Image (tube, rainbow, N blue to C red; front, side):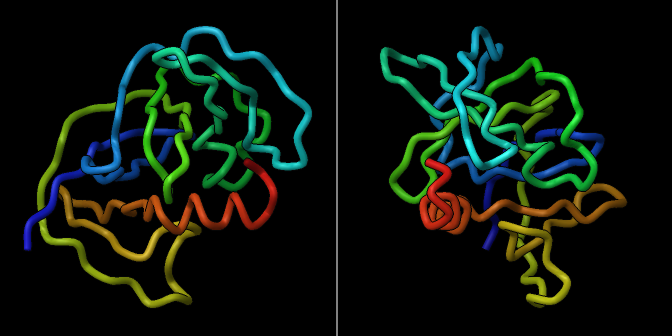
Amino acid sequence: MSESFLLVHAGGRAFGLPVLGLELVADAGSVAPVPAREASLVGVATFRGELVPVLSLARLLVPGAAQLTVAPMAVVLNADGRRICLEVDHADQVIEGDPMAVAADRAVPWSRAVLRYEDALIPLLDLSLLGARLAEEGSL
């Protein structure tokens, strides 16, 4: 069954975000830093009148990306019933295809499937898994 994903880039890598969980794609704007145990939590920002935690997708998923600068784009989404914002370098386009499951020992964090796009396999982020794990770790 074909599904739609927003193709985003962060930390030099491509990822797919399910279109069904997306609320907004915009310039990152102003982010207010907050103290946090989670290195990927860069602060909070207001989107559509609501304060939303802002996570760096690069810091969250790309090894060695902790020193990267603030990304210019924001993707606000619903992750397991929680609104969060992911900072990304850019959001290219919506891609469609049939996700392929990935064995647990081969998956990247917060991804259970990939999508073949052009000559690459794009990890597809599982928004409910991401939201649940962040809530479990007390990051949100």
